[in-house]
Length: 448
Image 1: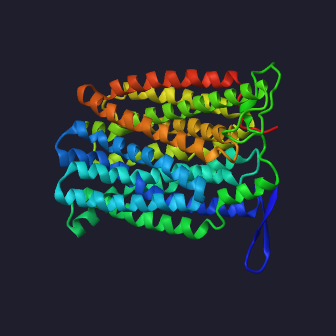
Image 2: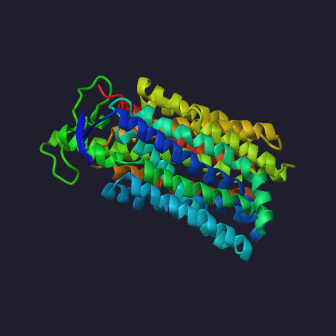
Image 3: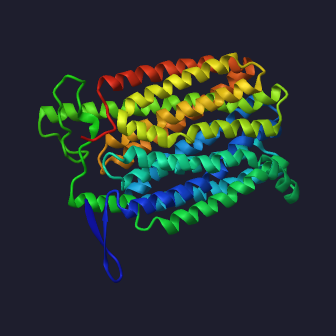
């Protein structure tokens, strides 16, 4: 598949999976790495700073909540902007909002207002929405059958910035002292600079825009049919109709196929959201749990770095497996890993080592579910309705994390880390049952 984009002096051919896609992946990876510095660093100190400024441990849970609220609130508007104008302006807008959020967070510690800090963290949370949007942008120009792999490569790039981010707590304290603010707030200076660089990378590098170019290519040659119309194994295969969203299906069979696809999309979004809620619910209270058991800021940073490494480091592996085995088997692998993590979290007690192992495995399980889930969501959609469904997924995913973060703070205040593990186990059961429902529909990441 190829299209021709007219340049100033010559015509440049583009095709799915060609050189433009490889360059796009590099640019998205660079922007995602830079954005990850801010996200990882801000999450590391958010809960500790809220507890310090407010004087209330229960409020500390709002750090992950407000972060997730910011990501959820931005997901649909950024998706709509991408749908109208392309991925590049959407990504850059998100980076700039997060940049302002870093400034607001620093100011909040100067004036001593925890609610203002919450607003700043929420604005920084938009950077997480940008990361989610970037992974979908990686699939715009991907060749059919390679979307899971290409998507996972950008997800993997989050590892670099996200792992280093929490390790900036120590240097951030030095910066905080130097500029005369609360020491921990110095981390937000790194977030500010990182978002500026990410915005520049995306603005200068994503030319031509991947989504707009993909539409141009597919306007000449239709998008492969979504994988959502397949029936359970052993049943007759019903192809997905090629009609635009909002128009009436031509036949009753088409209507059933479209209804089946929509149900699969909704269940996929729910599965991704459950993985997010488990991850945020346990991660949100880890800093305070460790500090209550003779932990230090450095131990917190190392633990969160291991957790974030688990989330992203194996993404290419899961992307490759999704392309070979199918999405649902990889999702089920993720749930099995998460189950082990929840069990370790429940028995961890005061052991820093068990907490670190549990948080790392939570990240690995989350990575398997979300990479395969995002790939499945992409395969279930056409280029016309893809940004809309991706925005809905990111919104529900972030909102689920926000709710889980808020409830985890309350649960931790009245219980302990074991209570949070039990809560996570309940969410895991819901996600696994929904995944089995997807498996009965034989949803695959592979186009045949």
